[in-house]
Each structure stands twice: as C-alpha cells, then as structure tokens.
Figure 1 (cartoon, one colour):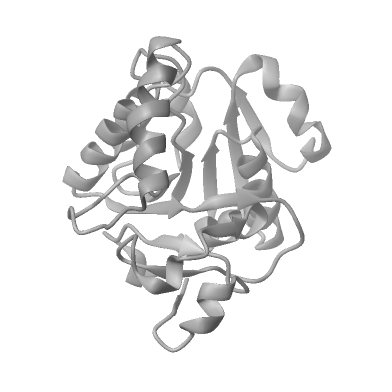
Figure 2: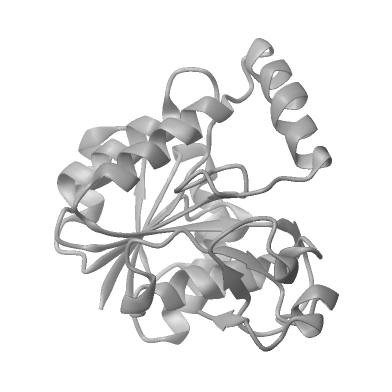
Length: 230
C-alpha cells in the first residue's frame, strides 16, 4: 500500500510514519520546508514532499498513486489552512482511503455531550487564539464538515487529550463524546497514530467519526464490555 501522510513532521505525523513503515507501506510525507529535517531519520525510507499542506499543487503531487492518506488537520492561522488542506485531499485523492485527525470538539451528528472544561476551552481559548491569529477552531470545524459531506471513503478520528509514553495498544472508541468509556480523556500519542494507521484497512470505520481513549485508561477498563477496538 502506498500511503501519503500530510503533516508528517509533527509528533503525531512521525509516529504515523513509523507505524506505516512497520506495516511495510510505501510512505510519502508532506511537511513545511522548514520542518523537513525533522524527518531525517527516515531518509531513504520515505519520499518527502516539502511545502505547505494547503498548497493544492503540493497535495496533488503527494497523493498521486496513493491508496490511502492520513491527514493531520491543523487549524493554523486564520486563513483556512485546515480547510484548504482538506479540500485539496478530497479533490485529488477521491478514490483513496482517507483518515483525518482532529479533537473531540468536532461532532458528526450533534449527539456528543461535552464537559464544562471542553466547552470552556472551545468557547474561550478558541476565540482568543483566533484574535491572536494563531489558530482558528472554526477552520477545523469547516474542514470536517466538508469531509462529512463528501462521498469519499473517509474516517475522522477524534482524539482525547494526548500524552507521551510507550504504547498501551490500540485505543478503544465510541461514537459520542460523553459516553462513559471516554471519561478518562487521555490517549498516548503513539496510540493515536496507531489507530489512524489501522483505520486504513478497517472498513467498519468508513464514514465514522470515532472518539478514542487509551486502552489502559481507567474508563476503558471500567467499561470494557462495550468498548470497540480499532
């Protein structure tokens, strides 16, 4: 399988590169020019295409001939970065298996129930980040809206709070934030990457927006019976 990883130089992206290579996939990584050196440890093992991920020409080159694409949706700045990235991937890889990453604040069907902490983060920190022109959460919302409306074979993986550490195994998931199994709200970043890569060949996740939590988190243990593995 030939896989494009959009946002390959970030922490999550590098973990996804590792996971994809372990599976024997051919990897094409996209990252900003100033971040290419972060991928030096993969030199000779992957193809790196430098450029802004919302540059349509860059994405067109990167996804050409790819069977799948893993896309880190980053709402950087206030100029529709995530939306531009998403639209380019949808346009140039319509037949590929597409897996996008985002946070719990995205909702597929409006049935999610959010804690006051998450609501405060979105309603207070979100506008402040936009005023500072650092990030725009609405951009990520719009990007996901376009994914949900497309007829591609997509999955949107919604991550909890992330922490570093050794893998605890494939995270468990639920369709709605607020479900008891997600209460611990923590996942190892390496396992978020593992879930993303595993979703490429999991047809049960097509047109799903799984909210994930660490397999060894307290809430996952407490509600193991209804847990879904990726």
